[in-house]
Length: 442
Image (tube, rainbow, N blue to C red; front, side, top):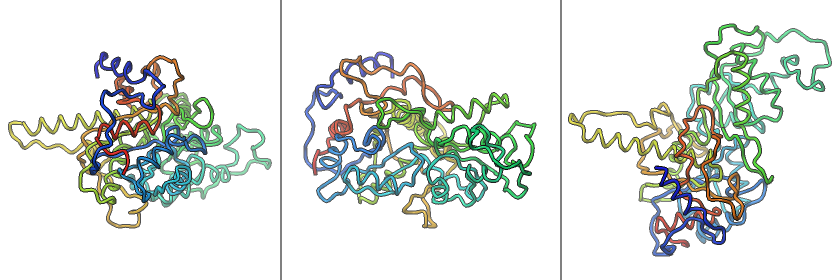
């Protein structure tokens, strides 16, 4: 997008809070005849649908009056994509169902850790889990068979956690455990409660190559695999200001490791928005929802509705960029002189042709493969009810001056600009349904 285009969108998208739509259009909203949707919705949760333990009124209205029919069924394929990683998808679905007063299934909920199902080469390894909540149960549901928690390390090696004087062992030091299993990988589910403990013990694991009974290994050219979920630097709760997210903890871990070793910490995989693999996985879930709804029209367009410019908006735009690049490559190949040039779809390359299972298929031996889809675009819709929440009278949307995205995600200033800006989730549906000429009510 050119600089002129950016300024044009900025001027037209956020010029008034007096109407429900900040998106500007000269046409009237379409309430026309019914049609089968060929688009899907990717809703962020915190800051878009809920704030803390309360539903945002506009979101509740949008679902009950526009997105769900009189029988309580979704009218459009819808998936809830959250960077939260401290709960099971079923738990989050039940929470959303209660708050929004519509029936939402676990198959519609994508947690930041959901793509870990694809990394089955780690499922039989001994992995360390970092985060809070029932991370061991979450890991088990995903497919991990041999896990270790931070608390188990503290119990086996009480002298390793020494920052908090009140938690230091009261008994004399004892010899390190010789029976403790060697850790083969680290999975970061989300921000922990005691950051100092997790930082210390994760660093210990990396520096000893998983053998805490042994001294630090001098050779640090390669460390254990680290898989991280949820890269949000900030997130929005009930507070009037954004709060630290797991991305902040990851930044601390990266800084400490590089300071001690002299080399950067490397990740085997990054999951959660704005990573491409998250949107790739979400697209597959949308296609599954479409099939369950009995829709014959293939999903052509995705709309990602979020409140965080550096996660929701950047991620959706990054995914759209990759889709367009693949389309250009396909066109070039189709017109090549030989006509025999073929390349693997970027989605498959990025995911290593991994299997995707959901809560509905996890006990089914037949799992769907990540395939090249027919989605033609992914549009980003920024709402003003969360991390991004300008006050009346403020200047139009500006590209954030500092990139809050994760260290290892490419930075492109153009990807910070949303396709559309709306006041809230209800207004977002107005815009999307208008663009798609989809009826507002069933």
